[in-house]
Amino acid sequence: MIAEADLTLLPKPVLMIGDRQLESASGGTFQHIYAATGKPTGNIPLAGVAEINEAVGAARRSAPLWADMPRNERRDALIRLAHLLRKNAGELAGIGTIENSIPITIQSYGPHTAADSFLYNAGWTDKIGGDVIATWPTPALDYTLDEPYGVVAVIIPWNGPIYALGMLLGPILAAGNAVVVKPPELAPYSALRFGQLCLDAGIPPGIVNIVPGGPEAGAALTSHPGVDKISFTGSGATARHILQSAAVRSTPVHLELGGKSASIVFDDADLDAFARQSLQGASNNSGQGCINPTRILVQASIYDEVLERMKRVAEGIVVGDPTDPSTVMGPVVDERAVNRIMGMIDRAHGSGARLLTGGERLGGAMANGFYIAPTVFADVPHQAELSQHEVFGPVIAVTRFETEEEAITLANGTDFGLAAYIWTQNLQRAHCAAKQLVAGNIWVNGFTGIPTAVPFGGYGQSGVGRLGGIHGIREFLRPKNIFVSLS
Image (tube, rainbow, N blue to C red; front, side, top):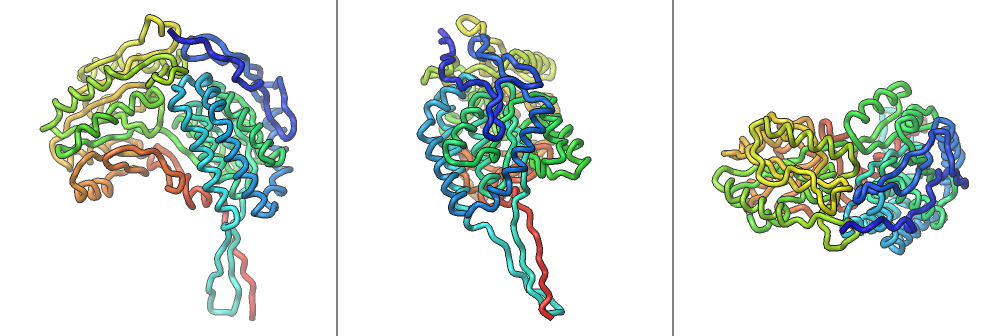
């Protein structure tokens, strides 16, 4: 059985602008649906142009206060926020499970990962500085200042709002910027609770503004003259609209987009270790993750054995109630996603691919929710839709290769370049393959998450810019050069 959502966990659906909470907005409302049961959880007020103007205005008025705050005070506020995220991790995980139906065991990582990001980036607040540069031919003092942009518009995804808020706002706030955050209609609740925690941590009103909204709000925000930088996480199609809008005012943009990540399994791989992670691309977030390994490239000599192992793993995945700790995989986000994914599955049959397992919408106790069985296709042609396009659902494409050169060619043969995975016991092969793969993030012999201190971002259609480590801080700072003549 699928339990009903505990609506008492959800924060009041409002817009948080400065020190105000608005229960209605000019953009109308959106009825949020719990994906596990197909039942509504509430109506979300959506920001329109008026509320976006108000939020950007609040951020602009508050930004100088935050930028000029003593660095130790800004640091301490971010540390307090990290502790509040940990303290309220159980509540935030429960909210997250209701808003996007990702299982509670996976949701539990989000608040702690976000806290790690704020703790890490808090440490950079008093280390942001510039350089003194030698000049010639005339005597001079030349130095740089690293300054915040001012107001950053942040559009976060529905598949991990708290995680995204941590990874993005950690460096953005540490660098001294104010933000206007537009959470998605499909998953607005945890961002609203996060906004309240920011105030509780002592971050001044107006520094973090939360305005749920749809396309109208997104267009108003990304074209607003009061926005100094844009950070968007989502689809490539939406990103192209944002880039066109940003180009009018030459507003700089950070993009974290989709992926079609390949996992290369060489014939000397530890197949027991691979098997344990082989279906992560389908089961993690029900396949709704940009870095998920959704293309499995297997060397010919072990191809049949790997298929057998993957089939067993797929059929052993526990699909069910996302609030049940034993559940490994929940539903996809909504009915539109079901229709889109099932359409891709139907078309795969005509591409020459062979269905190994799954490929159906689940019924029974899950009939009212948006559940699709973990699905594995074998013998998927390289040019087929399943090999070239992001499914964003629990579907894995498996393709055979003969040589290392062929594997690299196949792995690099899409428009995306976010991540890639290598399975081999030969470290020379691993290092050589990693160097040749056109992707921003490479994992060898396992996926262990994304540490806060490392750069994260993609090549090609997978994005622009980097989060994590010093790269994330620099993404939201701009250098100013100052030349003082001494002659």
